[in-house]
Image 1 (cartoon, rainbow, N blue to C red):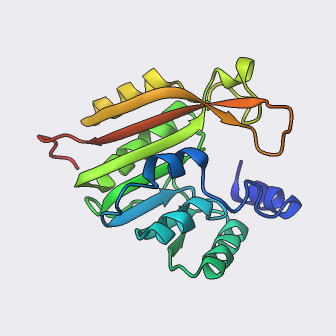
Image 2: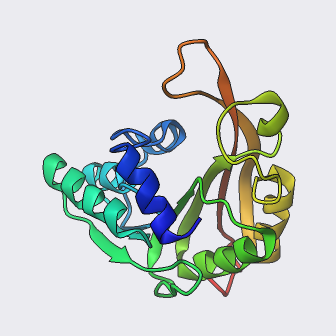
Length: 207
C-alpha cells in the first residue's frame, strides 16, 4: 500500500490499532530501563513511539503517511511527551549509523528483498549496545490466525528472518511465534505473530 492508500484507511477509522502500545512491546520493555535513543520504523499513528517516550526513551519515529503522523503528534501532545516525527519513505530513509540503542519494527510487511534492505539499514543504525525488536504477522496466521495481510509473500517466518539478521552480524536472542488476542473481537480468536529480538555481538563491527 502506498501513502495515499494508507491515508484513506486512516480516514475510515481514527487510531485504527488503538492508542496503547503493542502488547509484546509493553511486555518486553515495561521493566527495561531506557538506555538512550529509540527509532520506531513505520510508526503509523504513533502508539509505540509515544509509549517508549513515556518510558523515558528519546524517540525518533518514521512513517510516510502524513495523516498518520498528524495523529501521532496529537497523541504525543495528549500524553505530554516529545517525539521527533519524521515523514519519509522507509525504502529511501537512511537512519544515522550507530545512533540508536533500540530499533523497533512493528507490523511492517514488505516483500523479502525490500525487507532485507530495511533490515540492513536498521542494523546499521544500532549502537554497539543496541537491540532490534521486531513483531509482525506470521505466515501461519493465514491458516491458524486472524487479521493481517493475506499475501504470504509479505508475511513473516521466524526462522527466515532470524537467518537474515544473523547474516547481518546480529546475535538473535529470540525468534518465535506468539499468540495475540485479536483487537475488537470478542470471540477469543487469536492472531499468530512473529516476535524477534536481536542485538549487536561483542565482535560486531557494523553496529
